[in-house]
Image (cartoon, rainbow, N blue to C red):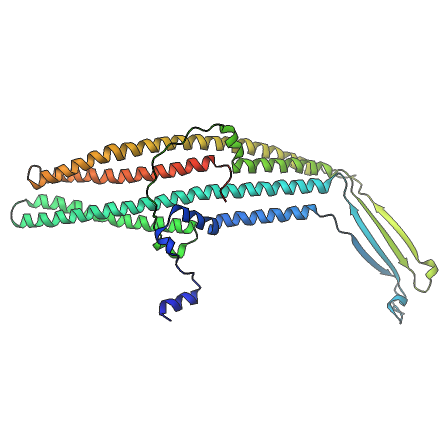
Length: 416
């Protein structure tokens, strides 16, 4: 066994997934569904809420009581079997009977809360899926920037080497060589910053898909998507109402309504009924049976606080529904506007600015090689081309993230 294999077995680290090194967005989503910590926590919350439903459905358990008295301190309980001991024993069995549909209301509250928790889980998945999409294309952009900066630094280095030969031959001045050298150093700094940005983007995406151990291996393999604009929504109000966060708020409202009814039901008196058997040792003729009923008397307090709190929570739940719907509508409107703006920026930067900068840079390179322009004109053309490439890549990344935000804004239920 090799040293690397032994270390892997000792630490318990999982083997590296080859797909990480050529990660598609679809694969990233699969990892996200399986491993994302925020989504796992939301699932645990659903399990807890469903368990609360089981508890709410349960009827009160009966109570068994045994009371022994009249034990003589001097003579004790005597000899013989347990049945013949000298002690007065009372055995009772009691049961609480809830009235006012308390159990049904309690169950409805728990069921509504469980439904709200499922909606909140879906909303966590919706938001985290958007975060994964954004992180994926941030990584794609970081990879693109690294390629651009590395190519630019290599190009400047070649130009600097050629300029050094020309300077040694006396064809150019020292100031011209210095200007090329300065731009070359800037390009090298940009390349170093691009590598740092790439490492940061790798770690961000790796955390979201539960692959921190392999963060340095993560590579986004998908190409940039085509630029498309979806059609207008047929029914925006229906889309808003079907969103997970709005559904969760509506379920919380239903739970608050049932909770208000449950608080009012506290004023309906529950009854505790029971039976008992009393045994007198040595005198079976006096053994007796009995029963009892107890009812609470609301003389000092009539659950005003619980009812007022429940009504306050109901009002807060109504406010929450209105707020959530307003935020959802604003998110949809904003996402549509951002998507249109991002698409227009891609068309402008890629089809107009980048094409013109590429043509200008190629012409400047040719003219400089023939001595038709000076080094400042050449460097200006290169800077413009370099900036245009970065702007085009950034515009593509912004579009992909805007498209993902639009999809998240109109998502009704997450795909399973």
